[in-house]
Image 1 (cartoon, rainbow, N blue to C red):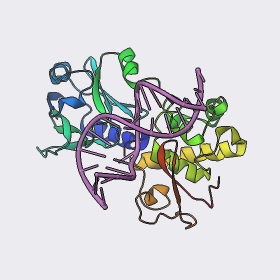
Image 2: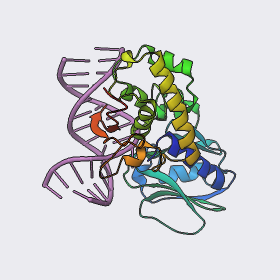
Image 3: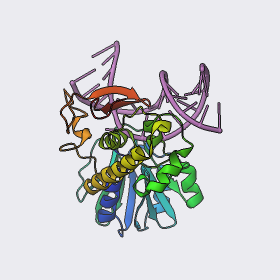
Image 4: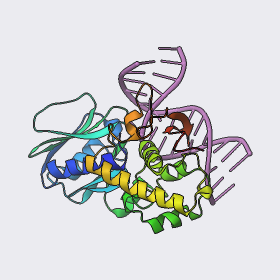
Length: 258
DNA sequence: GCAATTGTTGGGAG
DNA sequence: GCTCCCAACAATTG
């Protein structure tokens, strides 16, 4: 789930339910999810403080509280849940008790995590180097970013250090919309391809951010990802499925030929 | 038992 | 140095 558009959805969720609210306590139900602090450390740092407006960087969500920042990454299965009641879920790993209800960091597989940072330097240490956010990359930026790049376009799009926020599903979606095969070498893309790629990137991100998730119905490749017999939502051709850049990739052989 | 899964990291190979 | 592939992490489902 959590790629740029999902995390943008979490950010809105956080803003709506948690920002501006006082943290009365933190319950860590699985300490393994805390990566650079302890339940006690996290509790001491944020209890009694108020959550401020959250910020998203790539697939990371930053939630300032007092003099600290709670840094969250959702891995493959994480998300946020809010409930006014004690409506616990097995995979709720951290529960922030607010004056308005409970905000929960939930994750089935523990591939993400929750960190505590004190300043900008510590945040950058946690997230590692990140390229510009994918939804802010201009057409000119795209040329600059890909100029020195070799290898396949899909692995370039997913490289967080080059462009932040795009994962496996978004990259497939963008390449499908741009009608570019995921295995295409960056060096083989001409100016027209880059025009298409940028337009697709803007469109896919704009629309999926609006939904707070990559839509799984309608004119979206993503609607076919879990189908028994995946077909192209535009032309109806049977989709190809193969590992590209180390990840399961879907594309339309008629519209995105190699 | 096996394979698959929206993410990231590190090691080794070329 | 760059890029790719694989395994690992973890938990669950088919």
